[in-house]
Image (cartoon, rainbow, N blue to C red; front, side):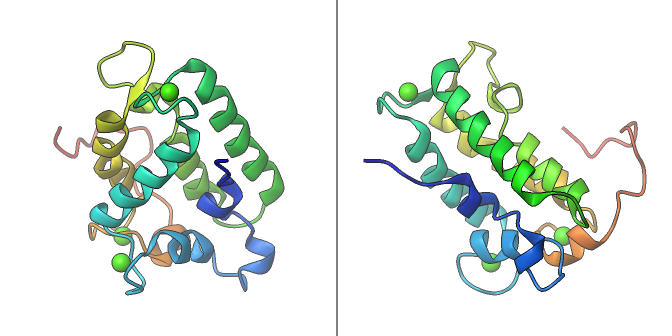
Length: 153
Ligand SMILES: [Ca+2]
Ligand SMILES: [Ca+2]
Ligand SMILES: [Ca+2]
């Protein structure tokens, strides 16, 4: 039985996070414990997430499986209930969406697509642009809203 809740994955519960935005996120995704979530760590962890939600083990998250995944993330955002860090927790949640990960547009997300988007996901959240995610990234706002200031592609 596969049971990995997104509450654990996104860990969006600032009430218990000693008031440091993003701390639980970093703790849960920082596999080597250096206080920063690297692209490699995000990729590995996303592999776990993928396995948890690929209920039929066919190597794709399809629309049906995504419903469950979406619901899990929605519950997390609800439980979070507001407060600081909302902005980047929203980025974290949105970076998991089907549309964000379905690179070839076939309506489902392959494991390669899902893992390959880890670096895009990290870049979205990396507000201080040091290449890794730390609580620092949750403590600041993006300087320029709405893009235009391209970061390569
Ligand atoms: Ca790390
Ligand atoms: Ca599947
Ligand atoms: Ca950073």
